[in-house]
Length: 420
Image (cartoon, rainbow, N blue to C red; front, side, top):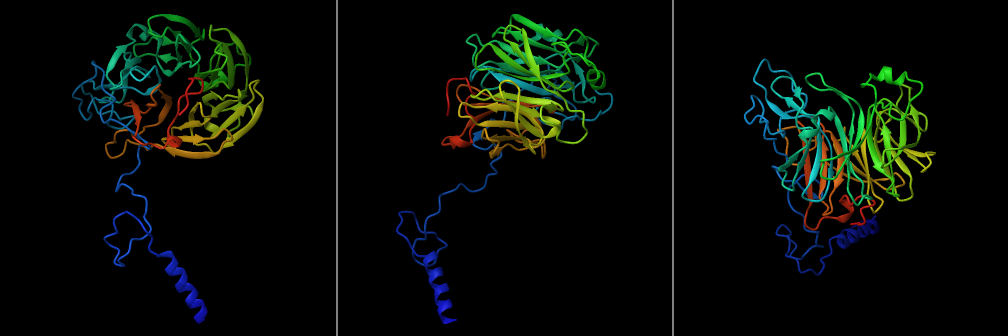
């Protein structure tokens, strides 16, 4: 027993043996010696925005938004999404759902918005402010109002990293604008300045219900079923379109708007999961440097991975609400989880490595808090942009903190020519 007690005492002594250090002694250490130093850490904090900072006033109202809203600020940054009707009050115009964006450098970002919403009267809409541009400070520098008749639910915005002309693509889900104008589902390609519509892939029929769409037995290329997301192939000549909410197909198109091929089918089972290659609400698509295709199968809570020819490789299960996939030049696979209000980092083998992001609509919110994040992009200086789809919607711009851990940053998109 005495030998055991002596051994225990020896272990205790070794654990607290003083070591030489230049750091100041702990004022609460009464032993007279300096204990092994602990890495200096800042006090407090909650790591709400990870390795990034976010300005308090980045997302701003449009000029025609209401400055003094009853029960709301009118700035699109406060309140709760889906506000209930508050009676017959004057309109309180704020941002609708901010659905996506593309960063065309650190001083120009193109945002897709679902028009305006009347926060004081239950979210009634008006057909304005569908596509806007902001500068690095969030100031609105351009409104694509000349194209307002094309949009009802502009879903995502893209610029191919392989395109020297940097054309802008917008996926439109279709619907009926306030006032009754019918907008068809479409993919639009604009010149980089947004002044020229280069081509449009437009569904010839108005948007159908899910039941009507899924009852169609033969689909032509533009018989879209609520198209959702797209990505570009490294050859610079093709893109993939996930079609989408109602259909279950991944289409290959040329950047000139010519259909090439497709694969996939609708998952019609009620259970979460589904057969390989079957989809129930496709939301998120990307291609890695080996040509493998990653598809967010949203209602099935998984990522499905395919060969360049569309043959199933594997699935990553239990990925909650994947709505966006972004692959960096370092082969990091970042997944946007709307329900979790997080950005999830995986490797190409599907291992979860890290995540950051926090819901920001509680307790009046905070700078950089998400509200159902929907798309992510990164500019040439490493600033990260995220669209929050809840309404009043908002856009975010995150700047890396000084000395940020590179492994916790979202690097440039694969194909942009740089890595972090």
